[in-house]
Length: 393
Image 1 (tube, rainbow, N blue to C red):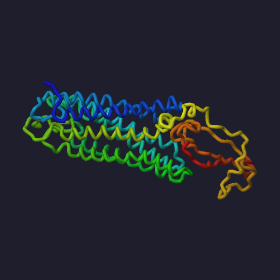
Image 2: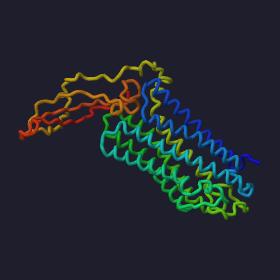
Image 3: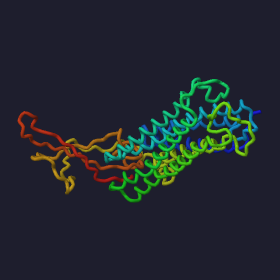
Image 4: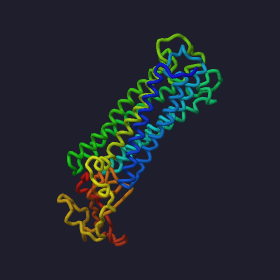
């Protein structure tokens, strides 16, 4: 008879609690973006996807717990073990998608404020490795054996081109990449914000909230070490049998999937912490509205003011600015408002002051220089962007 026992209640309670927390915070984030900031970006879509993936993951683990996940293997029939294994395989797929989406969301969030090229490259490389590794691991869940059912059906003959040990190595590598990404995304904001002309209080507030990702990295490390230990126990492990002949019903002092329980819970916790890390900094406008009693109209200004097309930037040229032009005929240009990139804000896409944004005062220098070669056009335009000040408003 199916019932939840052993570590089962812990699994169900923990996962549904974390699912509820992530859904609540993401809902508040979307409310802030849509109703207050009046703008939604790719990072919002990705973090929403990550939180939604927590639902089928929790459902799958609940069904696995009903089939014996968390109980002693001696208490279970082979059918219960196989059904539990199937639900774990399905659930881990949603977990991998959610973890990847959450980290890419944080990276997309940081890409809004990067100025230096090497910051961009670090974020792009992080996105590539996280998405690629998680996709491959999720895919191999289903293609490493033919037929797929042989992964959890111990009595069904199947041909596997990757054994359990190889898949464990792959899973550990994915866990290591995921943990490394957490640390990168937690530490990089300090470098991004360090040289910005911004109040120290604002720098510390934003960077500290983003640094919560360190805890996600710790969860990832624990999850990775758990994967390495999964196939060394005497009890059912990792949702993948070592072989059809493994004596699952032998007496044991360990719980069914004792290591798997840790793997499942740490995976869920890692995704939860990452989602919170990406969400908390975006709630500042909502916080100001609710607790500082600032009216919502403060956040619903039309747009960032644009400078006239012939605005003269000469007075704003830095004193240490060295012209690259041999003959300079002037420094004129116009400011640029780009809603797809938030050089103007970390919290909002090109939003107006008063919405919890980091506003960048941006100057574009346009120079015209004469060419000595008469065969080529007589002017060459060279642009340089100089960020004067950053401020949280």
